[in-house]
Amino acid sequence: MAKEKKEATKEKSVLTEKSLQFFRNYINNPSPVGFESSGQKLWLQYLKPYIDTHFTDPYGTAVGVINPDAPFKVVIEAHADEISWFVNYINDQGLIYLKRNGGVDHQIAPGKRVWIHGKKGPVKAVFGWPAIHTRLSNNDNKEPQPKVENLFLDSGARNRKEVEELGIHIGSVVTYEEGFDELAYDYYIGRAMDNRVGGFMIAEVARLLKENKKKLPYALYIVNAVQEEIGLRGAEMIARRIKPDVAIITDVTHDTNTPMVNKIVEGDIQCGKGPSLAYGPAVHNKLLDLVQDVAQKASIPVQLRALSRSTGTDTDSFAYANDGCPSVLISIPLRYMHTTVEMLHKKDIESTIQLMYETLLTLTPKTNLSYL
Image 1 (cartoon, rainbow, N blue to C red):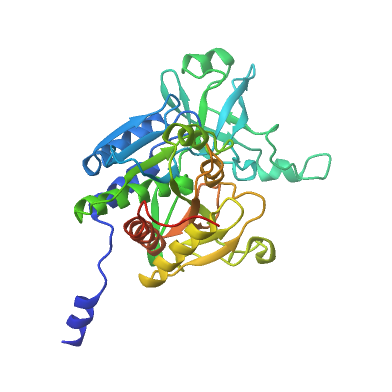
Image 2 (cartoon, rainbow, N blue to C red):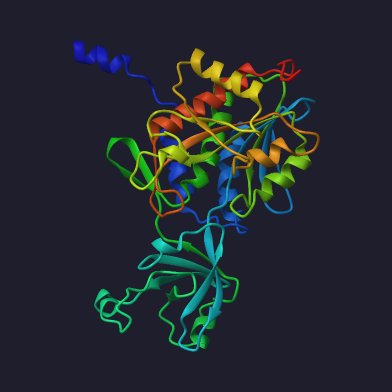
């Protein structure tokens, strides 16, 4: 009897099996910087039942809109792109050398499997790396370290002509193969959790608003921006187009409870303990106070961190666009950022969705965000 009561009172997840299946597919789909369109199509297809209308801009930022005719505009935003590589040079032996496309980590590359996205479709390849036997016996008595200059891809082609016959060309974009998986204790892993989890969460907020029949007193723009990883460029463009009155940005932040991360520098943030709210010049203090108040009233745990000159996220682009836009950053803790095993906790996804949802229900066009 006691066991039945415990199961009956267990809190129901805001995530459904349908939404989690979309999340898996969305993580598995490549969406590299500048080539986000396939991921954006998936995202819009999932979002469409929960919005009134949608549009895209010339570079592929996708936007769903609820109440499009309302004059007051609120944005919830994430970025759609993932770090990747560009094919830069093909040598006479058919080996492929690369340039970064965003802040991709060269140290994790040796031995990884990749997809080269060429004119004839994706081509499998690997990051080759000399065997440990040969590395330890080289004449310099110094083991070589991976650098962009000495990393290469091997697609099986043995000369330049064979590479080109596969549809691979200079400028072909390269993504890692690893996709979505689950670990013990409700942890999810995959490449591009940064920040495809954000796109997933804002879509879930739209779903909850629709399913709970909530009517908002403003226009809500659900924005999945491109090209964040190379300088917040997609957000810069779309902020000028929408001209929002308020912006709520979601991105990832570092879980600092792993080895080799300095808490004195990065703060104390941990997966499973709730979304992280940031203090910083671009973060609007009164809007941040509102979000903290919402979290307290809804019993949503949050973690705090301080940022310096910039947030390093699309918050900066929205805050300083046009004549200034009150903006706030709600981040989800992430382990092993910019690797193929980015890790986050299901409970944090749920809490972040709930915090954005409750914040939207609290905001109105009359909310006083004036500093003076």
